[in-house]
Image 1 (cartoon, rainbow, N blue to C red):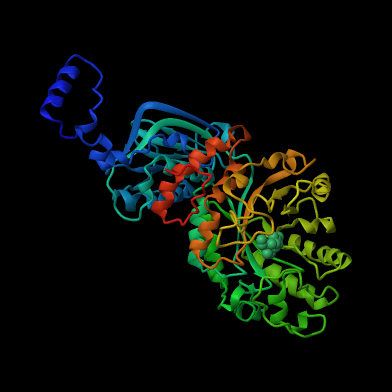
Image 2: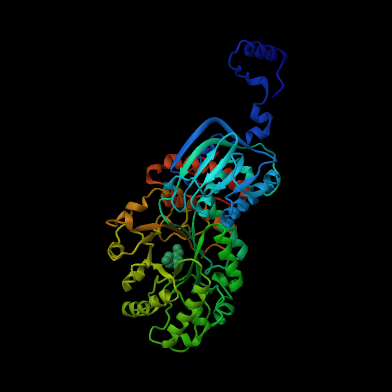
Length: 537
Ligand code: IFG
């Protein structure tokens, strides 16, 4: 407690003795409790009201606080390796900052932190959870490890932000008492990273994976090939990576992932319950492939490598048989590297391919995806080829009228929404933004937040929407700090649209919750854009 002057101390003693409420400290009495003891300042004022994405139901338990202590243990559902891995993930977050041992042990206990696969409300479904915090302990219940992982992301957010530090911090490590019931609105909650325009290393992609996992994103769409670069080793066509991956926008060294490195990325994402969806864009956006193998070109002449940012000038040669051997070989190797359900085959901006050729191409390629046990997703243009009902069109239009999407839905396709005027994280925030493009218009965080995916495309039934995805194109982005500047704070907005019920949607509430995230982003070293639309502290 702060040192009080003699008089103030006498007064305080007198008043407390008569049971009066603690006197309001006179201004000159010195620092408040928080200022006097910085640890108290670490206790977030209303963390249960600051969770992003907004949970389905939050019930605070006032007056109850849980404290992590040096002897806290993390209990995981006995016999579940997957639950144990979530426990280890949580321990890896908490150990460096608290300095506590936090052993992860199979079992269930009212004390400590328990991650259990029994007893959850059935409404949690495949990815939801229940989180209960009492004075004695924290219990996260789910039906799957993915649900436990989602609960852990929420638990992180109700602990002091400095719990995210990689070095030992002062406590106390408190979590407010309460109960949360939570589960996602959509199955597809995606982030896309373009590693073709500029190449990003394995570690830079892992950093982005860690960041999207904070907000319960569950799909990472990797744009692995484009005009400027081919980024994945294909053993049957080695020059794709070694030559086609040897540069990037602006003429830099580019790069590529060996298949071993790519498997490592896929595993890293899977440990965070994120499915990687690889994209091999075709028949357009293929200059890197065409430059790598002359025989892929209709005239047998390989074009030079391309380091600009124009689009729509390249096309695989639709009439050559070797094109389909190439595509088959690539899809076979990509499918073998993909534990997930989907392979994205692009299809956008095929301006150098006639519509009949585009349709003929897709009709030969779509069955290959199925043959290798995967489902196809693609940019919305590929619906021209009437893909199977299992295919997933990704809408990237700038209008809310999209008759082709409405028709596709009638044929049974479920649509992923990435409206370029809302979800394109490479759009400038405003005319002063140093990075990014502006062809779809300036997009600040309120634009990214204020739309209802279930009612966005005119006449598209709500049940035809599979979810949302935020593409981050990298024509102008070269390093993690650039990715973060464009993705934060808009990616959490898209993540909330993918997870939270529409009933919780409110810009006035979201912007306050977003402001409270900044403490964590500072600790995590996330280089976010301090949008003037958000009441940052
Ligand atoms: N459109 C192109 C991308 C990229 C983007 C930049 C799609 C589907 C513009 N295609 O978006 O390759 O250049 O904002």
